[in-house]
Amino acid sequence: MRGNVIVTPPCALRTAGEFAERAGTGVLGAVRYSTAGGPPRWEHGLPVLPLHMARPGEPEVVEVWHAGGDVVRTGEHEGLRYAHDGETLFCAGWIGPSADCGEATRRAYLAAFDLVERLGYPTVFRMWNTLEGITDRTARGTEVYADFCVGRGRAFDARGHAMPASTGIGSLGGGVAFYFLAHRSHAAVHLENPLQVPAHEYPSRYGPRSPSFARGTYLEPERGRGALYVSGTASILDHATVAPGDVARQVQVTLANIAALIGADNLARHGVDAGYALGDLRAIKVYVKRPQDVPLVARLCRDEFSRRADLAVFTVDVCRPDLLVEVEGVAT
Ligand code: 3EB
Image (cartoon, rainbow, N blue to C red):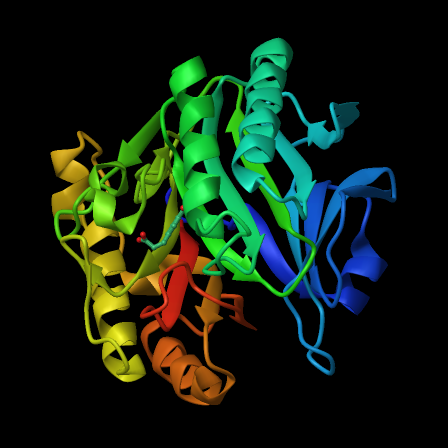
């Protein structure tokens, strides 16, 4: 098969029916984008995280993470539910609604770091965080996302883990939830974007603690091409929002940001001998703030991405009030 290997993305976006038919074999875990969120649960013996990301009448999307090999072990650790196949760990946690999501996030992240160290999957390479009311004010007058960033940052400070690719996005309910992937042996290269200030260097006007994430993470392969996990990416140049109010331009800027991140020039800058284009992106998730923008954003994105790519659109808040869209995916 050498020379003409079809690289399959490590995850797929399925309908609930497709997931029900094929669940079980070859699966590490799943995330259900549905009409209610809550703690991770067991389905077919595997961890499944329900996120409140669908409005009534919208179809459920199931993000299925593939296992390598047949032996999948599962477990629980301080409310986290996880599965691992000897190479990759999938782990989901639920922080839930809380008055101080910062402290709850700090504790949950510390439990996650404990777990990866104990199980021997030290390379955390992709994280997702969903926050109900992400731009809302708390009773103490702080912002939910800002509180979250404080707690997450403290956990990273305490353990010294490298900051991986991440998503921080709104949800429609269920408080705060998160899930992540970690690897046992492969090296990860965490990527910054030449068009953007590193998020961990954002000025303090965006919050007391800058966000702890990289713009992307490249996971070195055993052989052949690796996979590049693209963080949630928005219409931000330098550190400032571009084109507030203009959703079409925000899509353009967002996609140009992703293209610059995954292109050969930027990867060479990070010591990675590879290069990707927008057409290589798979398992694409598009977050749109205003329901009325969904048709336009979906069309603009489908025009740029491969027709072979799974693509799901969710109508949820983005972490800054002036951001109308955010896009993520996996380049393979
Ligand atoms: C941004 O670029 C948009 O807090 O984990 C994107 C990806 C964003 C991840 C996070 C936030 C996060 O700042 C927001």
